[in-house]
Image (tube, rainbow, N blue to C red; front, top):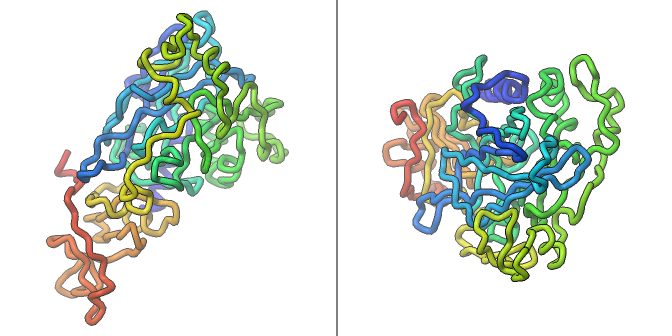
Length: 402
């Protein structure tokens, strides 16, 4: 199953056309982004309430600020759901392509992004899948969101987690930035990512997961400068790989982790009434308060919702899908999320200890997972070492639940 997942990643990154319904609508002088959540962090009662709609920033080929939209006040994206976010360009007559993009957490509810469907102002479509997080050893988890590729109609991308570093979940990236045209436009380059993941994961202008910094829609990201000289025949990277492993240059300020000055904030948000609390651009709610921007600390959540408790939040996920694997999940050092039981593999992964257990049978009676009681049966004399977990919520991803 792990090899099948790897093949799925390659298929997702290649130039395979998707149905038009996969992408959001086209709008004049705007870029629209469909954000799909594979999973979100549950609330205090153990039930997931969805993750906050992320902040989105757009940049033209020169790294200039093209447009941005805060996720604050835009609601939440539920597990297995998506939301289309329209980002009007700052210049209402500007149809330039959003060649670079950033996505960042807008609040204290972590969200696991399964895919982005991107529609430029000229109608061009691009896709960005959550598998990139898994490939680059960033926090990830399976998703149950089907993306019907012609070569793999059952393909379900994994998702990557983002959350603000001061929200009680330190350790998750605050966001991600990427070169849009480096994903889904060249089959040869996608294959090269599989052969040498460094060409994708260690090229800062191409793909960067921003860790241990605050990030929002007002911050600018690095771009390739000079522009990469792709192979004109198949779109592969230049032979000189040193051109990939660069810090990149920014076409605007500030960068991730840097604060926006009050004056720059007012200019960016186009305050036209003279009142600092009435922005007219880049926010879904025009009454958004200034003190909720990057300069102000975000409200902390209780300690019980920190990153170490994602694996102990009262949920167990049960799946029989060939896109999923309890073994792959347990053997990955970067996977994170609820405990997972695969009914076909007959394996259970305790995500806190990353211990893989077989399902109990008439022959295997201890050091195994009892699927009926949903408890681990320890070896004789080692009862105190068995994980004591109680599941309040069963997340059913099996075929019978569809």
